[in-house]
Length: 83
Image 1 (cartoon, rainbow, N blue to C red):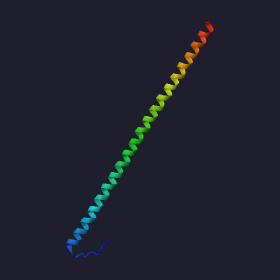
Image 2 (cartoon, rainbow, N blue to C red):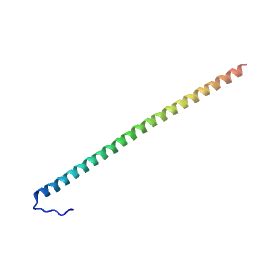
Image 3 (cartoon, rainbow, N blue to C red):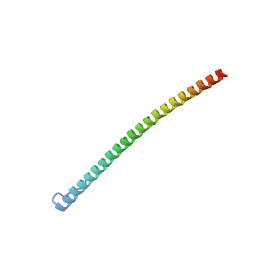
Image 4 (cartoon, rainbow, N blue to C red):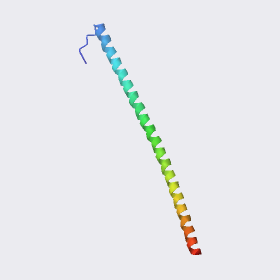
């Protein structure tokens, strides 16, 4: 803290104004960081939901592919047995 002459009203005003400006800059910085962390978390949850939905679709498609392969194998086995 600089040597401050409390009888010099201009110096006291400048000092107080400087403190107020620094406090406002810190508040703005904190609010920005808070918003950024919220944005990051929302993006993370959105991407996680998309990944889970994609994995569910993949599992459904794999099951459909397995079912179709089993039907094909069954049809080929029946066709081969008829000959």
